[in-house]
Length: 428
Ligand SMILES: *Cc1c(COP(=O)(O)O)cnc(C)c1O
Image (cartoon, rainbow, N blue to C red; front, side, top):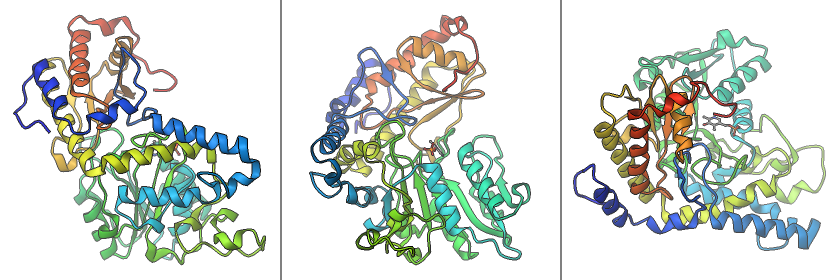
C-alpha cells in the first residue's frame, strides 16, 4: 500500500494504484467501459474465472447427463462440500464446518430451526433493530412456528444513533429469557463491524447460542470462528464473493454441534454413502453437510468455483488491507471535496469497526443516486436517505474512487440531481 499521507490530487490516486499489489486482479473482472461500479457489496461483478467454471458445469451436463453427478471435472454430488472447504479459510473455520447451500434466508431458517429451543423462562430470540428485513421475517416466522408471539419473543436491540449498535447494549440485552442470538457481522447500511469475539464470549457466559449473518462481511473482512467459537453463521455468495445473482449461499455450524439433528431435514443432509439407500430414517452427515435440504442448485453454485480460486490467490488478509486503505482514501476525499454539501458520513471511521463500504446520508439521496448512475457511477441507494459506495478491493481502483467523488461533487455543485425525482426505483 502507498504509505505517503493523503493528498486530494489525481496523481496521488494514480500513485496508490501503482503501489496496489492486488492490481492484477481487476483485469479478471468484466468491468464496463465508462462505468465506475461501486455496488459490489450488493452484487459482485462477474470474473472470467467464474464465467469459465459456470461454462464448465454447463458442459458437464451437456456431455454427461445424469453421470455429471459423479463424473467430470467437478462432480456435482460432492460440490457443496468441496466449496464449503474452499470457503472455510474466509471465516477461519475448519473445512467440515462449512457447506455451500441454500440462500441466506433459507439457511437462517435452517439454523434457527436447529438451534432455537424455547424452554420455560428462556423463550426469546435476540436480534437488532437495524438488521436486514429478511432476517427479521425469518426469525418472526420461526417464533410463530413454535406457537409463540414474535411481538413478545423477538427482542430487537435499539441503536442509539440510528446507524450503529453498541456492543454494551447488546450484552445488556442478553438476559435470562434469551434462548438464541442472531446478529449481522457487518451492518448492511452503515457497514459497522460488530465485535463477534466479544459478543460470542458474553453469550456463552450466559449459556446462549449465538450466530451471525455474514452477507456483508464474508470476502471483505477476515473472521476467526474457530478461535471465537461462534455457534453458527449464514451468508450469501453473490455480494463480495462474486458468485452471481441468486448464487447459492453458505452455512457454518461449529463442529461441537455436529450431533444436532437438522431442524429442517432433507435427503441431501444424509451421509453421502447412505443417501441412496433410500431409507425412511435419515442418517445425517457428520459435518455441516447435515444441514443441507434438497438437491444442490448446481448451475447457480458453479461461478463460485472460479471465484473462490481468486480469493485463495489474493488472500483475505491482503484484501482487507487494501479495503481499509481504499475506504480510508474515499473518506478523506469525501471530507475534502464534499464539505458543506449536507452529506453525513454514516459509517464508522475506526479501522476495526469499518466494513467494506462507505455510507453517505443525504436528504436528496434517491435522486443523487440517479444522477450518479446517469453519469456512469453505480452506487446503491437505501431508503430513505442512504448512499452506499463500495470500493471493492479485488476490482476497484483509486483512480475510480477519485473520479466517482469528482462526479458526485459536480452533480452537487451544478445541482444536476434536481433533474431527477427523489424516489426509489423498484429495485434500489
Ligand atoms: C443480502 C442479504 C440478505 C439476502 O438474503 P437472500 O436469502 O440471499 O435473499 C439477507 N440478509 C442480509 C443481512 C443481507 O445483506
